[in-house]
Amino acid sequence: TDTTAFKENDILFSELISQFAQVGGARYQTGRGALVDIVRAPFRQGTLEQTGNSLDLAIQGEGFFMLKDPLESPIPLFSRAGAFHVDNKGFLANPDGLQLQGFTVTVDPSGKKTVGAAAGAIDVSKVVSLPKATAKISAALNLFSNEPEATVVNGEIPTDSVAILNDSVSITGIALGAGAAGVDALTTAINTETGSTGVVAEVTDTGFLKLTNLNGGPIVIELNTDPKTGDPDILAKTGLQNGDFQSAGGVVLTGLVTGSTGDVVVTGTGTKFKTELRPGDTITFGEKAYIVQSIESDTELTVTEAIDAAVAGTSEKATGHAAAFSSQVKVFDSLGNDHLVTVSFVKTAPTGEATSEWRWSAIVGTDDNNNNIDSDQVQATGVLTFKSDGLLQDATTVEAFASTGGFDFKGGAALDQAIAFDFLGTKANSSDGATQFGGLSAVLKQTQDGFSSGALQNLSVDSKGFINGLFTNGTTQTLAQVVLATFPNQDGLVRVGGNSYIQSKESGNPLLTAAGTAGIGTITSNALEVSTVDLTKQFVKLITYQRGFQANSRVIVTSDEVIQEIVNLKR
Image (tube, rainbow, N blue to C red; front, top):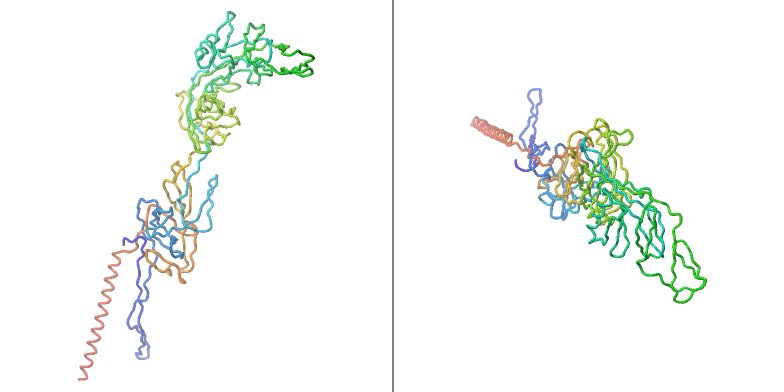
């Protein structure tokens, strides 16, 4: 009764011989004796017993598991006993080492499964889950409706009409950092960093900012707002930059702005330009060419070139915004490396017919961005527009700042990784995306679709026999499908021990198919089919057979007594 999937036997009897008897005008036929005609094992469904082992499989309905011995006979065996495990070579096998047979399965990116046509041993030893780069970030969040719009303090540095005297020059235009409060604050900030930059700042009597490089090198001031706080309102936005001049040669010069209408007078700090010249040679400074007519040896030439038609520039302004709310999400690159992306939100003045607008920025930290910038970097930004009911009207991606238009992460992964940001929710005018209500700003739900590589952690089998692998990265992958076999006459199968059968002429050839199709049974995981032997029923049958044997023996005794009486009559 405890033998897994064992099928009880039925005994059928038949008469041994028959005899005709003539009684009057009638002829009768009687049986004489009995014998065992056949012992059969009807394949009745056994009850299922839960085991808690995911690789214990029970067939509910018609069908047999197909097994093969990898070392000996290639002849397949068939069994209803479904106690399997992963053997030391990574194959699914039963306790006797017979390998379970199945179909291969491939799954395309859309999730569609393609099942192979040929059955074979199920190998899970080399299965891994490949990494997937993050392609989408979805967030459900609320932004505080009473958050004040960002305000800024503009710092201005006037630029001037410029005349440049002396030889080859290279001047980089002046720009102003985000959120500056004026030249006094800038002076303090610059002098704080003098030890590392070598630049000293002071305010002149006329209220202008004077910068001096103690190292004698060029001074370059970049106009950038903090990536977490918004966009600068600068001429560079249109591709222009005030005070941007460069002539050939590379001798760097420094100067001082003397006023809004004054000149910038520069003096050389580099090595003088020396070369051997002959009459007729051409010397080019900037865009002008000079022809040497006559020259004495060891003559030092001084070239003075003025920039004509100098145009007064405008003051450049920097606009800074403080982030009102931010959250972080872990994303993955094409190699499965994880990176932190900070998404910050700033409430801005609405434009057009919008009731309220928020600007969001996706920021990659210094340790993660691959753009050779020693600071946090904005990789994408967009605008959320809300209606008067607090629901999202629109969500657009404004720009991507990475060098090729996508996200560039360190670590050797593919560059230009496109990541979509979804704040809309499941449908338009819904509250399961971004909202702007009176509650505090908070992220309610945040997901991303990337993951790292993973190793096989566990296996499960569904009702159709699909074997699914659960990996350490949290993903699930379909690996194979268990084969079930049916026969035209399953009663013709031949027992070979170990709860297994082989086919015979009487059984016919097996039909291999998947569980749950064409009337074939389904598979139940974490369960085994128990024996169909019913002890109570078998004891009743045993008593019945014993009574029958006893009755037959009485018939023989009685017959002997009758014969003896007949013999006695003759005496």
